Amino acid sequence: MTTTGFCTHPAMIEHDTGPHHPERPDRLRAVLRAVRLAGLITSPDPFPDFQMDFGAVVQATRPLIELEAAPIDPRWIELVHSRDYIDRVRQISLAGGFLDQGDTPVMRRSFAAALLSAGCVQQCVDAVMDGRVKRAFAAVRPPGHHAEPDRPMGFCLFNNIAIAARYLQQHHQIRRLAIVDFDVHHGNGTQACFENDAEVLSISLHQDPRTCYPGSGMGWEIGLGRGRGYTVNVPMDPGSDDSDYLRVMDSRVIPELEEFSPQFLLISAGFDAHRDDPLADMQMSEEGFGLMTRSLVAMADRHCQGRIVSALEGGYNLRALGRSVVSHLMALNA
Image (cartoon, rainbow, N blue to C red):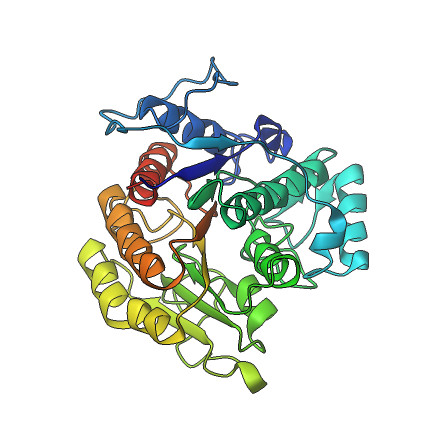
């Protein structure tokens, strides 16, 4: 029987971007409410006053294993971001302001929330590597995949998945790992971290960058130097639906993974390709996310001893986000 871990912490809502910012605290509240309604976690609800109608939610046959959250030690962040970068994020957070041109506000508790966000992903990695669980999901915010080694952007402070990958390499001696990012926006930060690395296969499926933030991730961007060929960008036409994504999974993503044969799979799980999401132009359903996840799980079972850690990235319609996370978790826990 597959065991799947789940890691989160209510203090991540204290990264308060305001009620009208797309990456707002209610995203985490919605995810945790939907996951509880599905019977996937059973711990007390830290947000009992949060109201959200998710409609009929598929019920889990067994719950996830809830993992204890802990903030990451900043020394592990330094595997991806410099100490000066970390200090800049800390200082601007304490003062309040923006880390970029206006998309990424921070305030006094943002830095602590970002440490928890990266820490939850790290805890998932450790739980998988020491055999407590086979797979794990980190319900975190702020997200991470837009954060480049020297630049925060796109709601992201620290690149959670990139830090987890370097941690796997340095601490757990995993030398060949893959990252699949199906957030609707290109994972530019993750690409910047690994485009010279032949031991990390980085695959991003995203809306055509000519029509969507951040404007990078063209098909011809395939890595640099010794990493050439280990960056795979798959731009999707606006309006792409479940069948389009599943076709690309079968024809491009899974074959790339099979050829690379990773020892561990990391997923940047963004759910903003959903048809109801306000920040993009795709037509995915929550069921589609589950089917994509099942394909990745089957690949991981063949090549990675089933080992997967998935971390929340985007998704900005609260109802669609909650239901999509449930579908993703059901597939991970199958």
